Length: 244
Image (cartoon, rainbow, N blue to C red; front, side, top):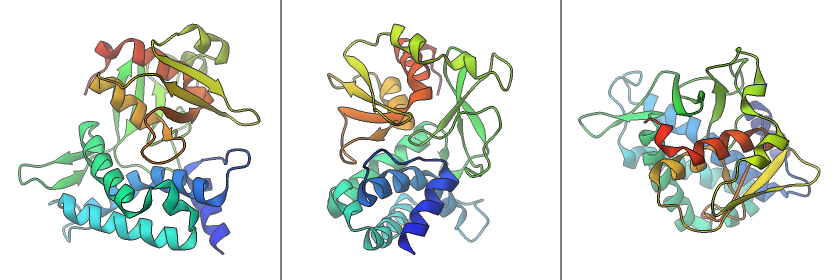
């Protein structure tokens, strides 16, 4: 039954398993992505249909409980999250990240509310699809979810994925202090980050489009879908083109 739950969640989010990835690590990645949508749902649970919003403490409390319940089903997951302290740190980092990207909005009372489905430009005619939408029924012109978000092009035809580039093109887009490594037998690549990121926009895009590799606090090795190599490398080379 627990396997069925993980399979159903990964299918709804469109997240394939890595070769030889155990249930604990896979559950970590799947719940990491699902957190974004659960946090949106918690914002709607204010008794007013989401009109007022929820406090950060209420959202973190509900998210922590959900992750703990999931870790009871998949015990290896808690190791990926670095135990309870790692869960709390992940939640404290994720909530403002989503607010900075306007996936959530913070009102004048300091409460978080959902935003309508929207585009978040990251340069070169590429946008991230953020805000409230059904991840099991994505828009036909968007790429699959990678990390916490999915991307689509605003300058090519709605179904023209070539605007994002292919693997060979992505190799031409060198990003200083970073490199890509293909994960054999999968549709994933690992982003190796050689030095800490100082540019906040670059850090935001990486955190939105990738999963931590070894554990939830991994800032040096990040996992992303192969389709996003060119999207990510081009946006990281042109942080001034990104808009919040």
